[in-house]
Length: 400
Ligand SMILES: Cc1ncc(COP(=O)(O)O)c(C=O)c1O
Image (tube, rainbow, N blue to C red; front, side):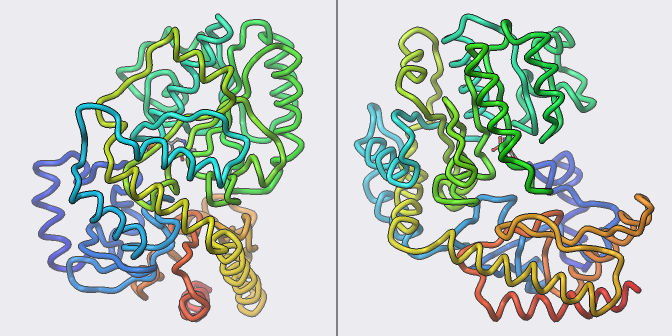
């Protein structure tokens, strides 16, 4: 780790557990040598660490940066709103304006309410489903945030074990697990809450159609956790991409290009459960993020954002494949174009992850910041992708 980064890291560790607010931003010991623990500035698809080292960023802040850092239309809208005030004593008209801007991109939505985090939005969807059905059990697939009701399948002391009784966790794409869960507990299930794409292999369609069918048969609600897929796979997220429509959905990351805004939304008849159950939080109507969300949605309406992201992602993914062939690397180019990745397949899991770690470490050193999936933003241009591919070529040659 370089000097200023290291000094700041040691100081921060003393005051802030893990030296970060987000677990995924913890320093990975396998990458520590070159991974920058702090970023002081970002613009477009590039960012700079405390030692002024520049990186082309493919993490996109873990997903939220869909247009690019400091995207002019978005930041301009936020500045204009700041002149009027951040949070009011009653609702702002911006709430409806932003709601309608989202619905222009996601036409199946009939009603929507705002929140601040992805976890908030997912939890709200489950509360609504339980309220609508009068049932308490849920089927879950994927990560939906740190809240108690979802925090059961990793070691998290502090979560009441009794909650496990109410949740069935299944692996993404596991058709048999869907059948079994509904056979065994269909009448008790309030909902199936699923991340509709897990950024690995594209096996979503059959899986989502089966979930839709089972939910209909058993009177459970289908909830898509579109926190990561929303506005990224397609303007309408996984719902549009796979052509399967849920009853409720949670949105967050790409909704406001990095400003803290999330939403739970869906069919009117289910959103109307808010007449009886309570879901409320003080900052949900914070107007700077709403202004950012409205502006982000407008850019998506007026420009081919997702089309360009798919195009650039495809260029990156094709480049991965070509370099893998050229260097004889035991790997393949995986994922969908908006977030492709290199999957090593040496036949040995440990060796795969050793190579993966080494590749990231080499890339950080060369000024490419990627991690697991390579998220593309609207600010990644051909020249950025080509520069990245050149560095990957050098890194993979070194890795041999
Ligand atoms: C699919 C999915 N759902 C929910 C969440 C939780 O969102 P947040 O971290 O904003 O609470 C995440 C976060 O990574 C996510 O990827």
